[in-house]
Length: 190
Image 1 (cartoon, rainbow, N blue to C red):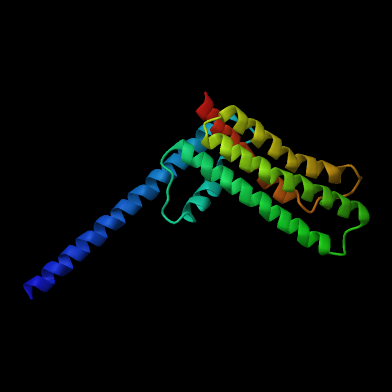
Image 2 (cartoon, rainbow, N blue to C red):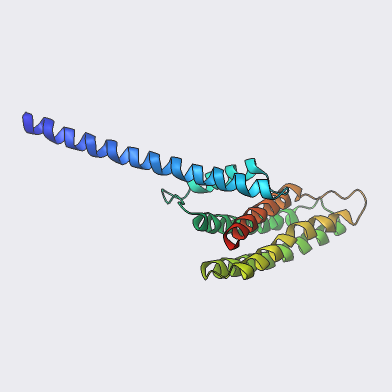
């Protein structure tokens, strides 16, 4: 009976310690996210603090316990999130192009946006490679170049009066994700 109690105690203590360590890591990564987003949003009027925190905390929660503990890791999370977002936007555009509700002008705009986002993906992958090799100026240039996809896509729809972009929300999110990456990269290069 005593050995059973002793075994149970050891298991309970092990589980408790593991839980506390995981809880501490989550709190630490959230503090890193909040502090980094605060500093970045204070230095860039285009960056929404709430969006930054929500995006990175969501990405962190999906990383299966691989919590970032340095700003460099947050940049990697941010860049990968932006690449994933661009890929998702291209999927949305493909679905919209199959929708018959859009006239020729809107369809041409969507095709242009698809090309922009298709080009943005390898550009962001280049930024990721440059960042990993500590070439922060090149990473900055690549992210800045990719970020243009959102505004150029949006501007295409504005060229025709009363044309409303069906990608406005997606373009805004993509822009914000790029601003986060740029702000973090610039913090590291200073």
